Length: 93
Picture 1 (cartoon, rainbow, N blue to C red):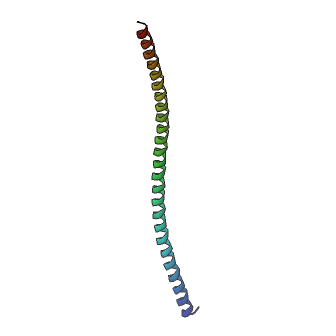
Picture 2: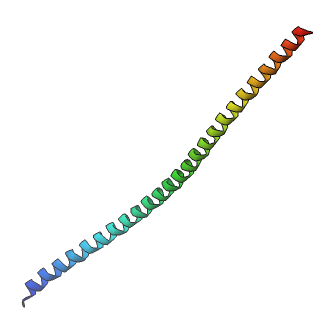
Picture 3: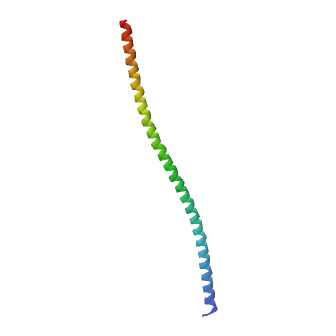
């Protein structure tokens, strides 16, 4: 094997090592970006769970409001009937 072939082989090895270093650096960068993405996804999942619970609570509160409104209407009707009865009794006196 002559020295020229060894020089060519050495250059190829240097280029390969340089490419490997670049790939390693890019891989580290991509791993870091992936971790950031995972953290962002985790935070979004937590937000979604919190919003979902808030939506469920809102639904339950809306049902309670409907029940209270119905109860209020029932009480209003009863009071109106009582007033009507009192007015009828007062008219008879």
